[in-house]
Image (tube, rainbow, N blue to C red):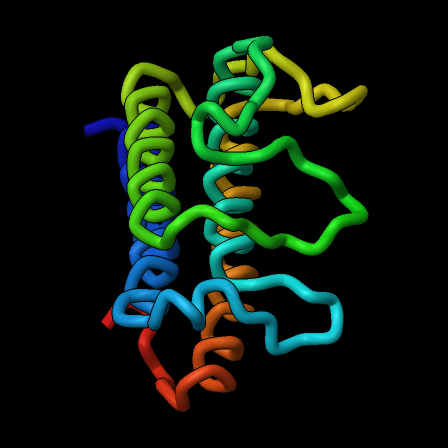
Length: 165
C-alpha cells in the first residue's frame, strides 16, 4: 500500500464513522421526533439528515465528478436554500434510504478517484483544490451536524450518547 492509499483509507474511514454516527443517533427516533424542531431556528432531524444527503450529492457528484444536473426533489432532497431552516416532509425511512444511496454514490466516486485529483466541477464561484479537501470538508460537515442531532435527540426523548455505538 502506498502512502496515498493509507491516507485515502484513513479519510474514508473517518467519513464513514461520522455517517454511521448520524444514522445511529436517529435510529429509533419516533416519526414525530424526526419532524419536530427543538431549536429556535426551526431545523428538524429530518431536515438535517436530508441536508447531509444533499451535501454528499453536491460535493461528490457535482463538485468532484462535475455533474451539472441540479439536485431535485426527484432524488428525495430539495435544493439548498442557505436562509431556510433544514426541514423535510419526507418519511424518515425515505430520508435514510436516500442518505444511504447518496453516500454509496459518494463512495463509488472515491473508489475511482485519487485524493490529489482536481475536481471537475466547482462550488459556486469557488474552485476546490483537490478531492482530499472535499473529503475533509465532508468529515467536518457530517461531524458538526452529528453533534446537532445528538443534542436534538436528547431534547426530544432523553436519549444520549448514541453516536456510532
